[in-house]
Image (cartoon, rainbow, N blue to C red):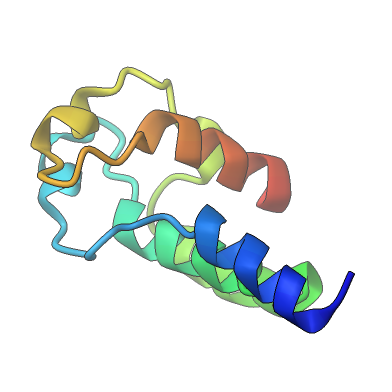
Length: 97
């Protein structure tokens, strides 16, 4: 696969989160959802998982890990951009947990 194809693929997979934090207000586990999605977008852009693990550990040291998400989807009701947060957090857990 060429670099252009890889770039195109990752662009279509990028999660369109603005980082506003509205979703965090309703999360019963107080997950740092925008930060986790931002880290996942960095992964989708081609960063190696190994280089991102320290940041994931830092982000989750004072809150839950992606794998702790109960997928209650309460957060999704707060998202003006209709991000499928529950599905995204599950993907993040697949990568980092």
